[in-house]
Amino acid sequence: MPPTAKLSAPERPRSVVETLPLQNQPDPVQLDNIKAQLDLVLLALEALAGIGSEAMLQAAAELHLESLVADRVSLWRLRQSSPLRKGQGGRKKLDVEEARAIVLITCNLAKQQQELIRRAVALLEQLAEQHREPHQAALLGDYLDTFNNLYQERMDDGDATSPETLTHLALKLLIDLLFYSASSGPRRLWLALLDRAKG
Image 1: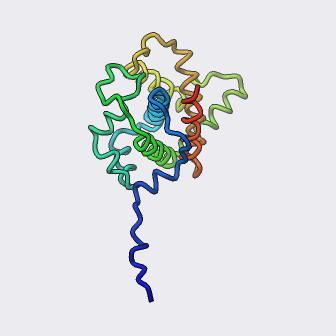
Image 2: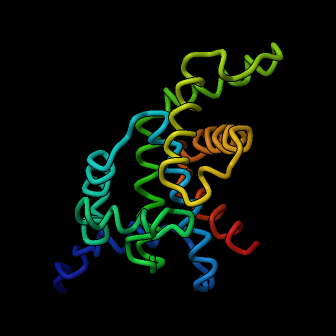
Image 3: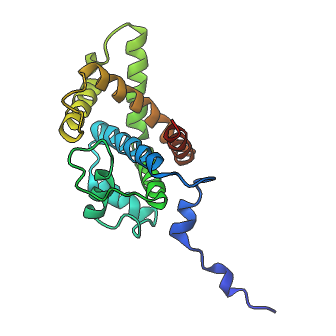
């Protein structure tokens, strides 16, 4: 009988990341757009669920992505590479593998918070039907306030962006999070990032 032991050694981190399709390598401008969008999605998760770097690193470990997101410093550099960020003290370059890793981490965290995301979106729909403002629900009011504060604190155009614009962005990201929390979330987010990066 021929030996088959060699077949049972999967390259785990790479195979997980490669579940996200990539037909063409994004150019530097497209990667900048991907960085910016990813950072905003994570910002929304932070604002809604209070997720910090520890939870992100734990998700990286669960997904066997430690080689791409090893510690707080590497995570900070990846997020700080967004062109929207103040000071951009991190590395300017984010490669495709790192971007895909952040997509998987983001969707893993969204899935963990799926119940909270669903509750927030249901509240939003309910208030819209009643022609009431989102701030009138405590959960949504806290989310919007936190999102606005984080955006103004971290982003280059934070002080110049109107509260109405930030509220609109925060609510759009909240609805997006509902889709990204599903089992098909990573693929959906990745394809959305690639699509937006073309514009």
